[in-house]
Amino acid sequence: MSIRVVAKHNIKPEKRDEFIALMKQLVENTKKEDRGVINYGLYQDVKDPNVIAMLEEWESEEAIDEHLKKQHFLDLLPALRECMAGTSSFNNFKAV
Image 1 (cartoon, one colour):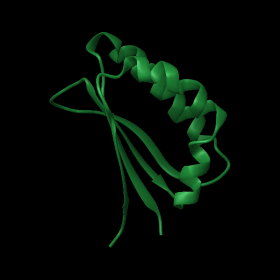
Image 2 (spheres, rainbow, N blue to C red):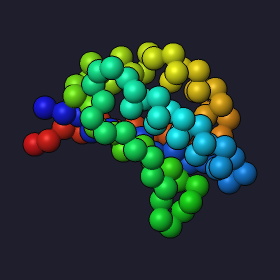
Image 3 (cartoon, one colour):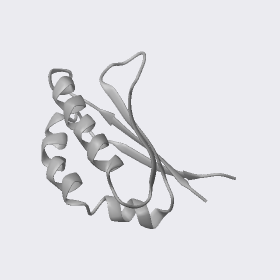
Image 4 (cartoon, rainbow, N blue to C red):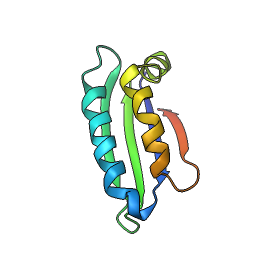
């Protein structure tokens, strides 16, 4: 059974373009991972352009854990955090 992740981020308006560029790089590199990723996409809120979400689908929670340890992910984290306004939310879902 796959796991779907919704990662929602509030972005500083002046950092939005930088954040989107960094996240597009993350999407590209994540899709090249050798295991676990089924879908991985970047989306912008229709009403608030400073709310950006990653909608992800993974084969398992283990695959998510492996992804979070990948160097390409870890390398981007400091720059991504600089772009954020406040905290992000992460929710994992499974089909019922």
